[in-house]
Image (cartoon, rainbow, N blue to C red; front, side, top):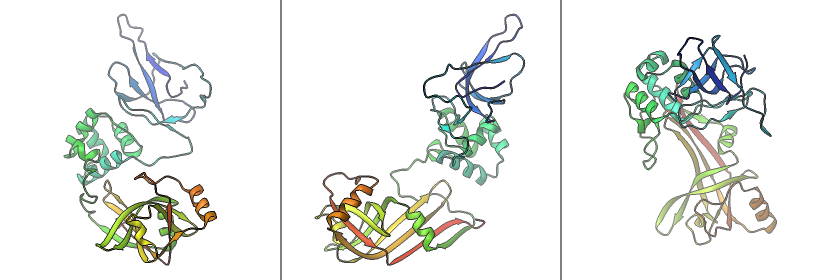
Length: 305
């Protein structure tokens, strides 16, 4: 027996009067499409791990243009979620909900089996939630929150309007310095950072969309804006990330002189290489470049990493 994502899984018992049961195959465990399967049942909308018996068979979807027939794994989830195709050679990182679930479970000292029992779900499904990006149903979140002694809002990452870092600290944190290469890697090619400038009203810290171009930080702004005050001065530019789910994070600090970029060829190249337009919108055509004269970074992580 071989299946593809989206095929119909059917159980028809030969017993007189036995009900027929069917569902959609939403997850494969083997690249060749052999059992077991993750099946979302049409009568209950629940997803369970199924090892087919002799009374089970599969109705295959007809080929559609552009639809590969090679078996693929797909993000499997509970009712109402959209499945996401996962290439066979790629193992995605868990989503924030899964990491929060795993973190709370470990804080409670629970095994997956025990946590799944308390939440009244299959251990395999809990393992999937913790290891794959997923969007479980509200009913599953309610059961998980009750089993872990937390709230649905906390598992969903509630508190977006609150400052980051209000979660619990790690039991055994470790603060370490980042080397220049790792700092550059975390700066990546673009993102959102904060530039620190001096204004007539005192110091100001302003978030900006930035690009890393030719070993310099570049951002677009308006001539009369606060970030434009960076031009002609030594400034600090900071990028960080706080992982609320795992109570860890990192920061990278750039210090250097800032100047306005006025050369037409250089401006044109920056525009062509920009990954996004400034999020605030409006006319922001002035490019400011910060040369990296000092680059440092730090990271908070578990002591065993």
